[in-house]
Structures are given as C-alpha cells and as structure tokens.
Image 1: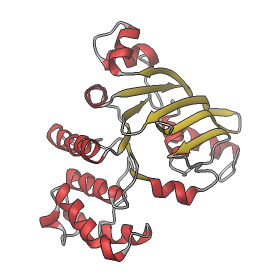
Image 2: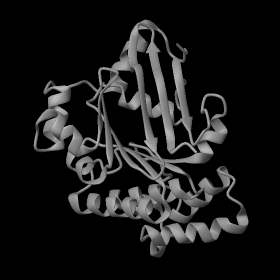
Image 3: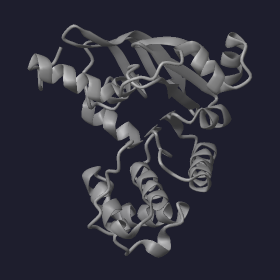
Length: 267
C-alpha cells in the first residue's frame, strides 16, 4: 500500500503569462508532520489552494488519500480538515453553534455529532466557553476553536495555513502542543505553512521549500541545514531563497488579473 497520503506530480498553475506554480512534485507520508515553506509570492498560497480544491490546476496531478480533487472535489474535502490563514468563524454564533453548523455541512451523523463536539471542545480546552459568542474570544481561543472545527469530521489530513500568525509566544506554543498531540494520538497527517522558521525546525519531520514557483529544496530540517551549511533552518531558508523582501503573492496575482481583465477565468 502506498505510504504517501499526499502526492503531487508535475503541478502547474498559470494566470495568463504568469507561471505561479511551475511543474512541482512532492509527497507527504501518512502520519507525517510536513512543512511547506516559501517567501511571499513564491507560489505557496496557490499550491495550498489547489490542494484544498479552491483552485483548479492548469496541469499536473494531485492525490489526497488516493482521491483526485479535480475529479471528485466533494470526496476529497471529506478526507481533509483545514485551518485557514484568515479567521473564518462566525463571530455572532457560539463556539458550540459554529461546530454544530460545520458538522451539519459535512454530514456528521446527528447520533455522534454532539459527542464529537463535546470531545473536541474539551480537547482544545474550550468546553467551559461552549455557549459564549465567538466575538468574545481572544485570538488564541479562536484558533483553538478553528482546530476543533477542522477535526470534526475525522479527517485523514489536516492543512494549517499560518496557524499561529499574530499569536503571542505562549499561545503559539500551546497551539503546537495541541497539534503534535493530535498527530501522535490519532495519527493525522499535518501539512502546515508558517513564516516562523523556528516552528518548522522544531515541529516538522520534513520540509519542502518553494520559490519562484519551483521546489528548491526538500528534506528534514537537519538535511536542509547540512545542504546549505547553516546552523538554523531560518538561515538555510534565507540561503535557498535570498534576502530580498517579497510582495504578497495573492495581492500580486490579483493586481495582475485586474490589469488583464481576467477575473474568474481558468487557465
């Protein structure tokens, strides 16, 4: 049986003349904690969106737990959970109501839905706040609730896009403790992005670095440090991608599309 739960082969995404993702290939093993790193504008966000069915590839193939998300996006979505970079909770609902709504959308049977919600709210230490409106929650509490929501339908793969962005060090550490425990206890594959290189170095078993739409390095943090002759993953990352400050990828693409009048087109 194939040990890879994520398999990406010759993946391409074009926006007109702009080649955002340029023929990349990588895999993620079942039960692995995998970091996907890159500067702003490198193609990281575009790749994540293709993996999670939010964008159609121009070419190449993706398999998630053996499912092609282009062929069967609904079935693919059943196999993964996701915590988006930007907040996506309903602030006017309670913690319980946010999870209940998600469970109904994902078809979690009513017979098990409430016990699963209770289990997860206790796991992220929000059970005592289950009836409180999310708008009263701190940033860290919201992140913990988003983690619980993403796990509600028992996914095999958990995508986390900048899950600790903007959080204080204590909360960041707590979030990673939840994630590592989840990986250890339930064997869920973790695929995450971060700009905090110390997080990736501490948590990830393997790393892929994307720059200018291409994969420029793959391996464990130790292998990347050895490859570049650096003492930290951050220094290795800078050695691989350079020191120049980058534009935000999504903003650059949106500006390009507006200029060319290409909103909504598939290329």
